Amino acid sequence: MKEVREHVLKTPAGGVKKYDHDALCDHLAIEDRSRVIFEQGVGREAIVRIYPANPLMHMREIRIEDLLLDDRGRITIGSYYDGALLRFRLFDPKTGNAQRAAVFGTTGAGKSRLVQAILVACKRSGIVVHLADLKSGQSVPEAKGQVATRVTTQFETILMLRGLVAEAHRRMKAYADMGRSGFVKDDPDPLVYGVVDEANRLLEDGAPFRKEGAYLIKELGRTGRSVGVGIIIAAQAGHLEELGGSDTLRAMLKEGEVILLRWSSGMMQQLVGDGLVPRGEALQPVPKVVGRIQRVRRYNEVAKDDEDDVNSQGMLYHLTGARPTSMARTFVVGSVAPCTGYDPVILDLYGPAAPPGEPIELELHLTAKELELGYTAESPTPAGPAGEAAGAATAAPPTAPKSLAERILTILPPEGMTAPDLMTALDADGCSTKPVRRGTLNTTLSVLRKEGRLPRPDGTGLIVPIPAD
Image (tube, rainbow, N blue to C red; front, side, top):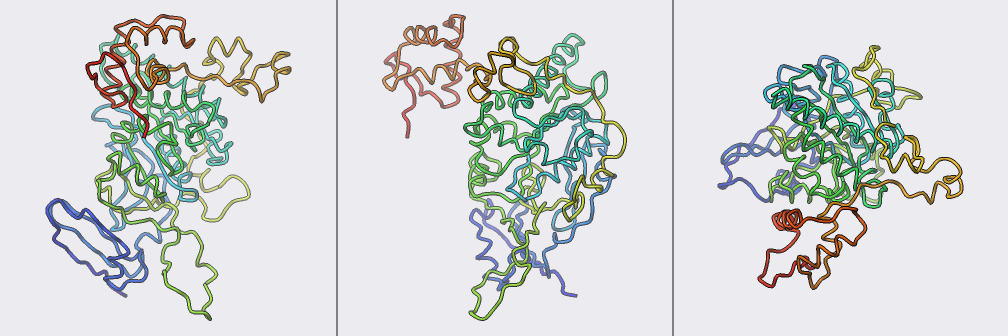
């Protein structure tokens, strides 16, 4: 049996800032890039390990005991390349905080199986889950009947998120009246999670409810944590801008649980830019096919039949864990081969018991305007003769009202405006029936300047936008 070779390297102060995995493998004369693992440690040290075969190729099946919360509020979802267990936190018993989590990965990278594991863990641990499966229910079909609420359309997702935000606000008021500053699990309220799978469909540019969806997720990330209402999203690994804008998610991602499966180059650039991956440090790529040897074939060589088979599902980096640059992989969740119906292995993991919690009554979270127009939870289009005459395709979907900051940035011309003129323009833009107060305007302008969305005052008295690139 071949042994593992290990090289311990001394690095410059501050560690290696430029790392080329292919160049390292070429230097070591290793054709199978997946056999070589590079990891930086604390201080001026790095380790290069050369395995006989990729150590993450053969993972065991996930077990029910893996998915029960430990005394630190974590579940075990897989292992690192060196055998250390990969844990994912669902609750912090020290602070009483629910978590904010995001799972990113390209198509076929293993997102849905990881979401299934999280959903099983929540059910088995008494955590209430309200789920949006935006692939028409196909991403995690076995979750039907296993969660308190399950929706499959964008409009239902908005109503579900409104319900979660309303519950977070109710708890904030109730806990304040009790004199309580934090959440105590099951006293009197259970731990609750909103889970949005295929969240990119809700938040991508051009999606009908993008603005409100981004706002509601941000609000849950900001206010839900301390009252036991968490939020988990799973999305394609594109650009963060495709998920409602990077500003919406940056704070949530930096302080939550972030899993990165096989990614796109655009997502990696955004993660580096947002500080989730140290600038200048490159993660070892997750290949689509592990063990493939990249070389030029001779004219009479024939490729193996299984050479293009995808076999890296579940390989990942836990970016907010203790080892953000160490490659890991989830345990096997469910059947390896596709099933003709519900996966029996996943159903066995869920178990026969009823899910904890009560469903969100979606109809209660329709706005007065939506009710007036005849909207229902099933359809964001007017009902009755008016709707039939207009036709579903022409009915405008409900959207969140523009914030004052958005209105300001929309109104400002390139040459700028004085504060009195801006107030007059805001009062006439038709976005609100209430006049803008001078103090509110000044506060909003100050926030926009701190965020770098407006320049600092230049002494002219004009409020000007930042010129477009």
